[in-house]
Image 1 (cartoon, helix red, strand yellow):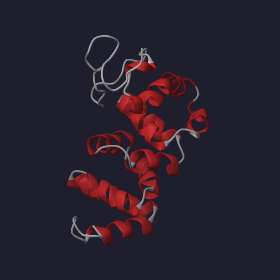
Image 2 (cartoon, one colour; image 1 turned 90 degrees about the vertical axis):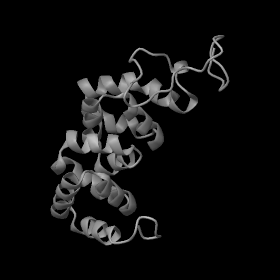
Image 3 (cartoon, helix red, strand yellow; image 1 turned 120 degrees about the vertical axis):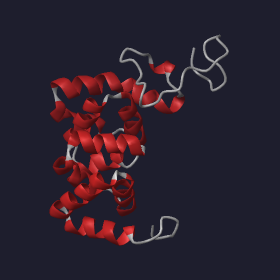
Length: 173
């Protein structure tokens, strides 16, 4: 039986919602997840295996998977696995995932990956998302990340500083 949006396998209640603080068990079946997470649930075991055995193969494996599905996958990985995944990808690939994470997950990834490793990823993010990330981090973290970004990608750092001057509710902010 599959989740049809109304009830689950005869119980009359939907399956539990998946959130980043409560990852799906690694042996869970894909039907357990809401429809939007099925791809992530299906690939999670293989991604975990590649993370531990062949991290250099990750980029090729996930190359055909939509960024939203990869962001969903990140909610099922622990912080260490998520950091390994982002570090194993090219900055452009990792940026597409980091942009889609919620603020607490982004902060956790910056802490776990480290400023030097995350700066190229942040530099590859869109200017708006890059600015939002830096502004939403605790002040000391945001300042340190911006300083590190200036060393790696001065143009990206300048865009952050320019966009940060605009009020958040304006077209430029």
